[in-house]
Amino acid sequence: EAQVTQNPRYLITVTGKKLTVTCSQNMNHEYMSWYRQDPGLGLRQIYYSMNVEVTDKGDVPEGYKVSRKEKRNFPLILESPSPNQTSLYFCASSSTANTQYFGPGTRLTVL
Amino acid sequence: RKEVEQDPGPFNVPEGATVAFNCTYSNSASQSFFWYRQDCRKEPKLLMSVYSSGNEDGRFTAQLNRASQYISLLIRDSKLSDSATYLCVVNNGTGFQKLVFGTGTRLLVSP
Image (cartoon, rainbow over all chains, first blue to last red; front, top):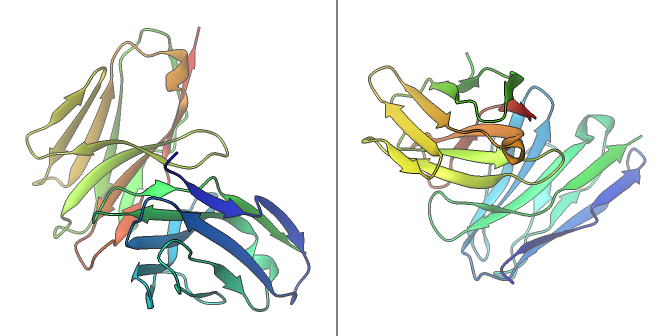
C-alpha cells in the first residue's frame, strides 16, 4: 500500500530535550516536505527536500533541522524544543509539483 | 493580508443541500490551485485540482476566477460524510513545491 508514515504519532516532551520525528514514504517520490499546523494559522511549511541531499527552508524553519540521506526518509529534528513548537506536524511527499500525500501527523507537546 | 484567505465557518447545512465556499489569494503570479479535504485530527487529502475552465468531479465543482483572484468549491446534494474542513491551496509560483494553504472552511452536514 502506497503511504507516508510518521513516528511517533504522539509525543510529550520537555523543553530542551532533543527529539526526532521520522518520516518515510514507499512511493519513490523525489519531493518531501514538513509542515506544522496550528489553530488559525493553517499549514505552514517548515522544510522541504527536492531529492537526496537537497533540502531547503520553508516559511518557518527556525528551531528545526532536517536531513535527506535516503530517498524514502526525511526526519525532522528539534535540537532544543521549546513550548512554541507544540503543534501538529505533517510530513508529505509527492512526485509532481503539486499533489502531495500526507502522513497521519505527529502531535507534539513541549512542556 | 494573508496569502490565501477562507471563511472559517462553520457552515451548517442539512443533508441534500448545496453549499459553496470561496477562497481568495493575493499573489497574482499563482500558478495552480487545489482543494484539499481534512477530517478532524487527520491528514489533508487532495479533493480536486482547480482549472481555469472549471472542473467537476461528481457532486463537486471547482471554479477559478483569475481576474478577481478567487477560487470556489460547490458541493451539491451534501452527504453526512462531507462533514470536514476544506482547505484552499495555491502554488504561488515562487518555486517548486511552494504550496500555500488556507486555514480552511469547516462544513457540518446534519441529518
